[in-house]
Length: 181
Image (cartoon, rainbow, N blue to C red; front, side, top):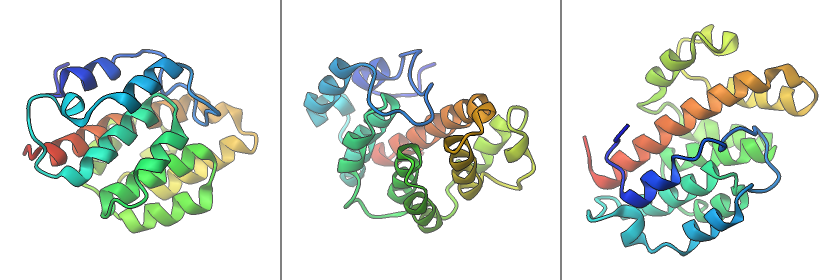
């Protein structure tokens, strides 16, 4: 599906084996991580100039996140202001197992525009989320914490939640960065 991404971003998002581990310890494909790190912004973005250059590091962090390079992702977002960057920080800290920090960033982020769509996309796959009125980052953190401390049966549900969350938040970030409606 063409979502208007640059060629580079499109190629980085076609990997089938990504986002399969709720709490990875390291990336599976170090060469891809190096490629993301070394790619200049103008290649990452393609021909268009960003409307919000502050979100370019968040997009790169999103690619690191997608490829399980969570420490690389974390290093790129600490100084980016705003609720969207807070939500990305929440996602990163959650997968790192840093649940207090994740909850704090989730509260700071508040509600984002893609949340209602994200909830609709997972209602049939997530009994926990289906009971909510909107996407609930606090609940998501609680599910990850339960998984980390032994509830392995949550893994399939978490994979689905993680995939939908990433796809929608990354796309929303791209649209804002590039000034798309």
